[in-house]
Image (cartoon, rainbow, N blue to C red):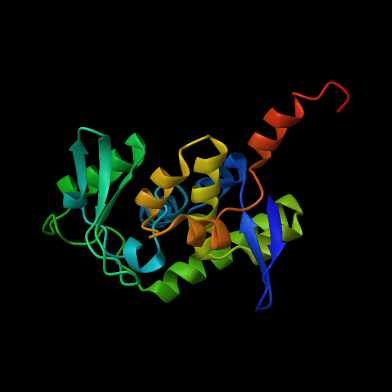
Length: 195
């Protein structure tokens, strides 16, 4: 876990490692909670976008399976972002088995409930792991983690901006890109004989 003080508010920005993302997803109480968390940590969605995802938004394209974000409440713009195969399958299955239309959201809760879920799970993980960094985890940190994880995997920064819905690279660099993931740091550290 990487942490950084906010410049203009209390608390800290959090970037989770891949293992910590898996811990968080694994601690979800049910499928709806797990889907919501994965939409943030694995697709980079904002809170307001998570609660509008419907099965019909998962599409197969020439670029692979993508999640269509029709209109962000923040930017008002359309974008597509990659979605992991297991998450796409889960969302499609929800659409197949429930008695709601395919355009009905799969995460049927308020933004406040999403924030409460993350706070509660982070508190549980802090107690379980003994890592006080969990106390700072918020919903937006999932999006921040996703973006930095992509860059740490050498995904082109402009592609990350497209997928994340950022209009310019500077916004991404100023607010989302953080300290490289522990995996990237370890990879780079292995290049130095004396470390």
